[in-house]
Amino acid sequence: MNEDLFQYEVITGDELNTNALKNLTRICDCLSEFFDVPACAFAKNGNLFAAALGKDSNDAYLKAFDCDPLSTFSASVGFSAAVDAETAKHLQSYAIPMIVAPDFDEVAIDILTQESETILVKLTTPLKSYKTFRQEVVRKTPFGEISEETKNKVELNKDTFKIATKTKPATEQIEDAIFAWKVSKYLTPISVTVAKDFKTISIFQTQSNAQAAVEYALNFACDSSKNAVLHLGDTVLTESIIHAAAQARIGLIIYSGGEYNNIKINALADKFNIAILTTGIR
Image (cartoon, rainbow, N blue to C red; front, side):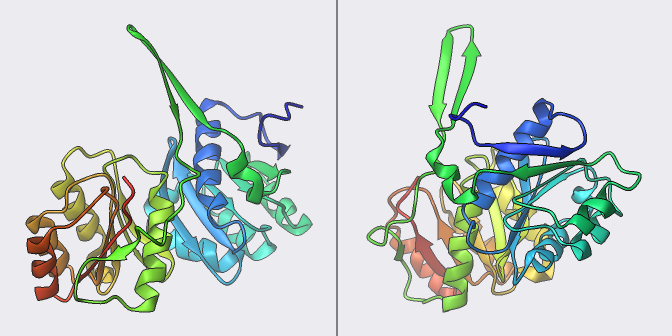
């Protein structure tokens, strides 16, 4: 056993291949942000695409599942708390290659292993400790190795976390903004997340055009975007994005693009009763 690695146990199914390890890492990245509450996250091909918090594991799962039901087919899923029988019954209906959790009820294991090749992974190190493990990405190029340490330890700072507009968000929107920001830490740099009621309504990433990413995410969210939170990753907040957010009836934009002080953009947001919250973190 390597004490330098986060510990887990494959309790049923095959050993984890490269893709499974990527999904496992991305799921635990997200869940580690919510280790003390029931949370659920989905990942496919190493990309996080849905996450939610709930009153219990089943509630969190149903909310996360509702984010993007079609993508959940053949996707891996993880939980911050034990998987119960009720959740297992729903999971059994889908081609889920891997389920990750701190524990599984015995009945849940029986349900999930009936005529199924699903890999069940039990986390034996507490999720609370996840961020103490250093994560480093090393890429080999013709010019040498590029080593990048992941930013999973970054936390919001009350001194830089500010409301830039005259329009003030509701308490619930601020809570959703913090949730969206934590999830977005593990997306690609230019990413867009729409969130409401502690669940992601839509996530769009791997797009070099920020405006297109915003429009795609808002179109996917459809009517659910009313009074929701729009999180922008490492991009520039433009008038076009404000107009798109207004058309979708977004209530709050949380901006993670470093320092921000754009009076013109703030005035336009105020015109549409949209609050802008800045993190001061790129």
